[in-house]
Length: 153
Image (cartoon, rainbow, N blue to C red; front, side, top):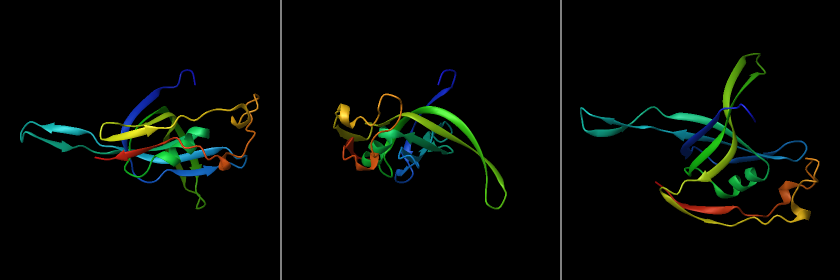
């Protein structure tokens, strides 16, 4: 969206990508990325880990399905998105506010892994959209693979 601040984060997935669907059938993936800075300690001459940042991420539509098929716990990823603040009240009546990343792009980092990409072909009957912005197919029946990532740190 215009005016939103974009954030790029590189880190590792802390768990599996959780894929779910809205009541209207739109896929959404949720995952957490952990990024730990490395700091050089001049006194000891060694690198050490800084304090980790954990950021909950939300990814929508076809990229959500691709992420769920492709990425797993420990995968090193590059995510680009916009920070969003959301408030909610628990069943116990406690108010909470969270900051999450609405992901626009996600990619496997090739720093410590290799990847084989499978381009998804878009056919007019399988695009999932009817031109009005509405979803026209059940995304849960999609058998299109986005690729696979192997390797690790």
